[in-house]
Amino acid sequence: MRIPKPWRRRIFRTVPRRRHLRGGRLHRILGEGLFRHELWALTEPELAKGLALGLFIGCTPTMGVQIALCGAAAFFLRVNIPIALLATLISNPITAPILYPLEYKFGVWLVGIPEGPSVDGFSGAFGSFVRYARPLWAGSFVTATACSVVGYALVKLIARLLPLLARLGRRPNDPTV
Image 1 (cartoon, rainbow, N blue to C red):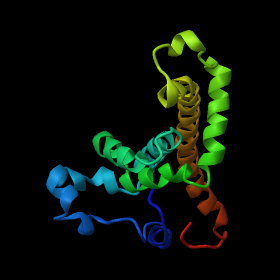
Image 2 (cartoon, rainbow, N blue to C red; image 1 turned 60 degrees about the horizontal axis):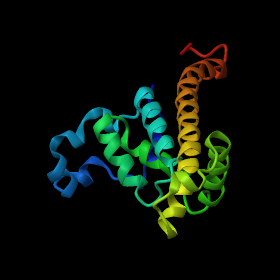
Image 3 (cartoon, rainbow, N blue to C red; image 1 turned 30 degrees about the vertical axis):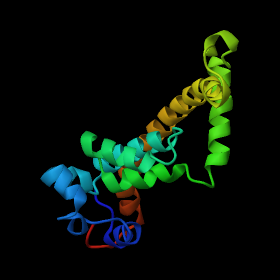
């Protein structure tokens, strides 16, 4: 199932296209593999996989490198690059102050906060990082997994419902039925 053309134009107006990448630095580094069909196709399986990957990486505490990380992962896992990159924006400077503390609290509930002996040998800022990183990563990993599974399932569900809704919306005397 393909996304209708007017929606494609609106959604992907600012996303780099293959013609913009040809001859550029990424093309020289990655070669012709950058232009594989599945990396740019707007079909339901590629959209679902790209959304799942982007949501997973976007929910992890990798802000600042998540776009590059997601782009590389999308290339090597052969999923839709534009959708994966757009989905990482679930965590941005506006949502991060809400998302990361919630993930941290969830991680504390899952694994607790390591006490002194588990962070021995680390002091100062790095000691604080070690102490708080484990709950944050545990909570974000579970949250990221749940978000990516829900995103994947929603794309699959919507792809199944769209043809049904299109058939229901036709008039009974429509000759195309």
